[in-house]
Image (cartoon, each protein chain N blue to C red):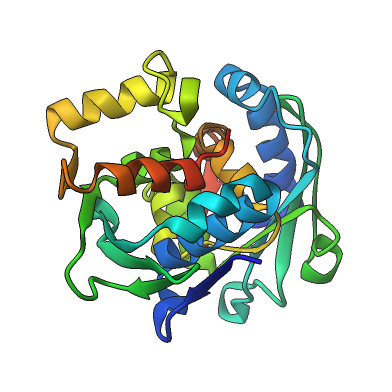
Length: 140
Length: 140
């Protein structure tokens, strides 16, 4: 039985997976640009009530903290990326590349400096690869 | 102040939103590039084949309009994978503002050109347009 996504337990596992990924440590080493929030749109029929967000406190190739919160709190993050639940499932399971998902408007940068995100595109891919290592139970 | 705008209907095209945002944020971050932008004229089409998305950027009269899909007859067309397209803005700039042949991203792009996973149509006539666009999108 995997860890349900999204949940506080999954968010903690995501932090641990990021910190266990040497490629993220390499490509994210220069990241000093603040917190990144992944916001999941509500899907009450799957038990996702209201906007749910995972806020990652990323710094110099490590994830110092990862918390599950609501979209309003996540709005204080430096970068906010929003997507429907199904789109996150596709990206975080490795089915769809995150760059491609942004080009297809499946992931939307709601807040933050896009050139910085593009500059760290390899680090973003490693975040996704980290997520893929988690034994995840995606509802639905 | 440089004017970069999305044409009606381009808001749902993630690649168009990305390119328009990159252009305008880069011009804000690097005001010295305004001179290049103001002299730029022509149409550039970009097609991210694996993402099944395309855009056209029309430059002229000190502004840029980004359209969904191919609009008009492009002076320059760039076709490639989403990854190769994203790399366009990560190209390393060397002397005289030209691409640095030793740059890691540049070498990957040269390889993509050789292997055909990235194709540029409209050269050599469109070379100045390509070089100037590269300078505007560069994250260096």
